[in-house]
Length: 229
Image 1: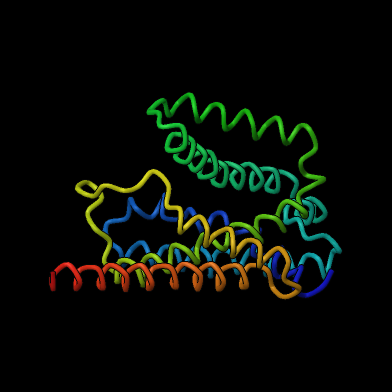
Image 2: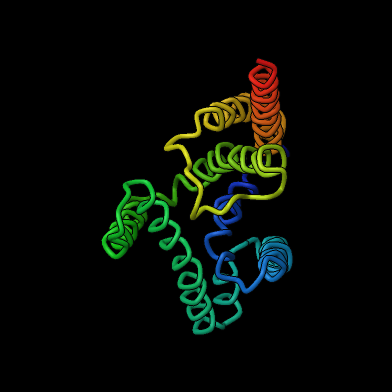
């Protein structure tokens, strides 16, 4: 595996959670608390987990912490850790599916969408999705990061770091320029021989920034013309 492919794989492992972290941090008491909690989770928690996996791979030729604990005669603790890990991970995963699903099909039947999401995940697991895990993670690392580029360009360039009140703002059903920028970023990431997620973020952010700057210039020009008239 090349270095670029390995980095893309690492991105893919956590980029979905990173992109959807705001689904959880929106419940924080303040923006500062949300940022601190996110940094601790992704840098300290994730970093420690990666370090343990790397250490296990070097010493035991096995990166799975549960298998390592079983090899040390700690099978009960290993099973408990596996259960807690699945529980604390998949509750967030199925919550993300419910939030996205309800928003996608415009329904408030959260329980039904949650059950459907859990069922889909279970079927994929039983069908052998684990065998396709690495290609799937590479795809995630390629096609999800450009979303972040569009979001950052929207925040810094479009809204000048000040989002409007969503309760009083009318948003379009589809942000066509944003989707176009995402498509351009995804295509660049997929075809790039370099690190796909970084390429995708940069290209998508640049593409959408150009669209926003041009659109703002056109609106200002039109306002001047109408004012002069």
